[in-house]
Amino acid sequence: MNDIILSLGSNLGNSHKYLQQAIYYLNACVGQLQQIAPVYQTKAWGFVGNNFLNTVVSLQSNLSPNEVLERTQKIEKLLERKEKSSGQNYADRTIDIDLLYFNDNIINTNHLQIPHSLLHQRNFVLQPLNDILPDFFHPVLQKTTKELLTLSPDKNQPELTNFTLEKKQNLPYNFIAIEGNIGAGKTTFATKFAQDLNAKLVLERFEENAFLPKFYEDPKRYAFPLEMSFLADRYQQLTDDLAQYDLFKTSVISDYFVFKSLIFSKVTLSDEEYALYRKIFNFMYKDLVKPDLYIYLYQNVDRLLQNIKKRGRSYEQSIKADYLEQIHEGYMNFIKTQKDLNILILDISDIDFVKNPEYYHKMVLTILEHAQKQEKLSIQKI
Image 1 (cartoon, one colour):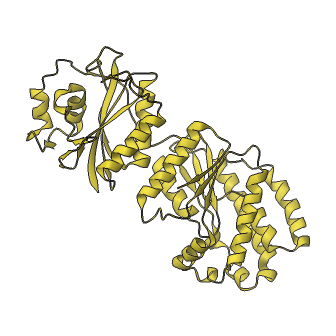
Image 2: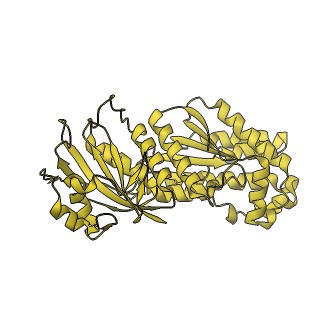
Image 3: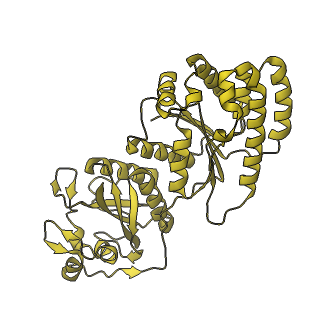
């Protein structure tokens, strides 16, 4: 893991909001936040403009310097930063993210200089940096932050504000359902995503279902009791968990939505059984809270079979490719008929977001972009 230090500034619009949003995006898409400095108000540096709000953050990440630069620039664009006019060195901006340090590396290229070439001349950087890392050592100037602040030529004195910044993200959704075929990785992703967003996590209790191993051994005999038990349990769990307001959580993230009961039962039940099942389902479904965002993780069948084999549940090893194809078609038919549901399809067939965390960060950034665009249906390949 690399130790990364970034400077954040904003002087357009709701600057506090832009700083907070930038921190959420950094935590989700660049690395794990370690420290956030207090927020200071300072005069514009190098040009005449609005006063800035500034802070400094430290984080840990396995990204390279160029990857950090690329993602911070994408975050700036996402937060509506406008390009500077030709010949302009500085300008008012909604957000500005500068890479100050990357470990104790020294990098000097046409598009990246580390340590930042001007950090020792800017009090709006040095003051918040001194608050969290006074003894951090500048590898070129051979001085600590505290020493650099003492020697700074900058005459502008930052003014401490009462603004506070939080590490965790608040998405504009109360209930997010993450779905996918068997072995798609929905539980793994939902667990990590809920942790990063400080959300309440609701996981399907499939391991407690006594009919599941029996179903894989004798589908015709156990399909109806299996689907009925799943429906009852999903209905009760979602009703209970969504009804309980958690003062310490911002939203609810589940690794399923109850409509999957209809998708799986369509494949597993006979026509007569399905007709009865659907009547019961419709009665229960109308009373359930619908997700504000429905995320479908798409994996091709070959990858699904590999994942199923890898996780080693004995009762799943007999699952066939055609069964997985039918389940996927059921999800697609459901998605096509949803006019009011906010849906994001993430194609993750070519990635492993568990082994490669950068893909997880890309998934989260795609979700954040979807939230900002407020699209009803979006299909994105990761």
